[in-house]
Image (cartoon, rainbow, N blue to C red):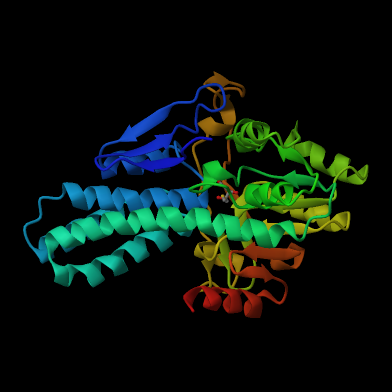
Length: 348
Ligand code: MRU
């Protein structure tokens, strides 16, 4: 396949998701600042992938740190956490990974500076490995929800490119195929960054899973014609009541699915749960540059000076969510209880 994220000891290497599928190129991030730029500029994107990349950015930064004592190394860690934490606000996996690295740091510090640097590298690699394992477990739980012959709509890219490998929503599809089920997929193009047209279509074609690309405004029509059986998406942050933040346009898909009586499934690891929030209203929504809307691949579409909005995510209220699939099982409404139960299973 390909490596979404690769640790090379003196660099974090990322497949450049800005130029896929036409070019398969890798960006070599030689320090934490380059890792932060790669997250901000969406060389790497997708909530779990952002978290894994940030963990590796911290490990790289500490490895390059010239700190000669605990206080100085902790100060470098804080600076790295602030640098990477300031890249994008919505995907909670970023902050989950930074917090996990900070906890590990305090655990390791009594063993000395070199042991701490080496242990942080191991922890970042563990986060990478566990992310793939969580995707496979989500896939196995989710595949059971799919009928043989299911015609699935997906929005954005929640695949191997959005994680350390295998994918969340696309992992559920891959696991269904591995279980012998015949499925086909409609992929929303997902304006403005076109994750569906460029990344999801590319991944599924590589796997030989039948995929049809549509523009985002075609989903309602195809649902009305009975050509879609369910929708499956990923998530960037899930609040304690089950409200789900995901790529802009996901809420529209959920409303359409409800209107047509179709299941709307969310697939996300517990590292995407933010149970400190009582509702989706508290989820920070990133607003990205207007260029993403006015231009496609550098070509201007819209007149100079036109007003632009570009919220990168929206929130789907829990009552539109049929189930949330995580690595520990399937959560159903009421989500206040079921999410806590599955999150606790993680801690156990
Ligand atoms: O702006 P992006 O491309 O980072 O947005 C990604 C999404 O919304 C994904 O659906 C989500 O992060 C889940 S990825 C497994």
